[in-house]
Length: 576
Image (cartoon, rainbow, N blue to C red):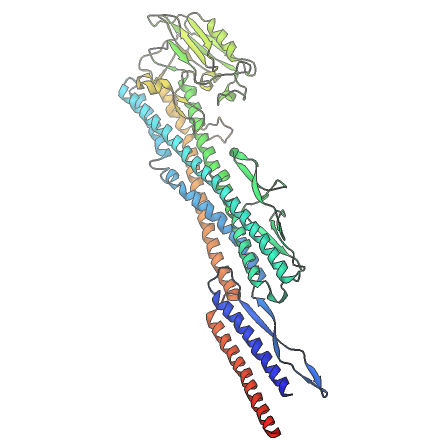
């Protein structure tokens, strides 16, 4: 019986020592990211029946439990994805603050107002070359503003796309780590999930890896009773199962020419609904935010270019042209209005006509009222326009190797245009003010860049072919565009002023929403982490209290051994 007491006391020493080891492990990992507090679960050893009595055999550590709340763990996965999404989006939007921050003062709206003001000043004194120089300067400033905005937005768009590659690489490394840890856990637990806490540390590391993965891409984890572990996208596509992994990779091209992110082997897009995680935030920034702003800049540019060129193409001064070459080429086999033409505004060509007026050496009209050149949508080609122009006395027309129309007047003669109801001249940049069709390609015509004196403000009288010196009718028509609703690109019909206001408002709304969401998700993350720590975190005060408790129990077991030893000595003394 004395030996039984010694054995029971020894089990007490061993179990309390094991419990102390768990506490020591907790304290050592107090600052380890993702570590979950562990607890030693003491159980009584199997009893033994002696003399009709059931006598206990001491204590043992039955298992070591990770203190984890699965509900909080899942909430952290969801929150991590959303926080990363809005953080990436907010950072990207902040990066272009300089593009939009001064939109209403010294930026696009101001440049557009200055452009129209310069034309208004020129209209008041249309013969002042100094005011023509001012129109050229303000027009150049507007072109630079639109071009710079486009370039800066595209730079952020390209940077976001590059960051997606980095996120894909990080996600694939985490998937490898998750698979490796799952194999390690299964080996340690021999298929019995969570058995005796044999793989608690590896499970902590795997949970942390899954949380890190969720910050890159929204995922869900599924653990089965037999120890199997799976990680899936929110669409249900398998990413990792035990030791098998499906990586992320680039997929097919999407809007803007960038590529999607898919699951390797299946080609399934990682997002079917609302995106999340760092990758989702970067895609949202790249395609929806930057892509949307670029579309709006392009829309402002397109409507500005075409509306001004529509008026300017039929404009002239007292000195007419001797030679003109169009800025846009045409395919010889396609009709002028075919969308397959390289000219950005080819689709705007419609059935109508324009008049060409020829003047002799003295500046007198050769034919009063000029000659009409007819255009039929869906039928007329550039070659037919050339033929019609060549039929006009004093005019020679041809098409260059790049498809541009060139018009020359006979020696000593000149020409001008009026009344283009077909939009041909504006679409193919014949006698144009602006060039290009988007924010990336907008520019000033060669004539305007060559000399401000080439800027014209008047129009040809359609009946007499006379151009009056000092006429400002074209300048007034351009000024009226400021508040004229228009659309040449399929967008809603709005004035250029309203388009710039809409762009500014959209950016401000996007920034405000991203900041609110990031702030909300940050507070939520802090709250969830606080809840996790209350369950899983190591509290040094609690550990010290438990240490004292197990220390006293250890001392008590040691005292039993000492007392039993004294009893045994006394018994042996009786025998002696």
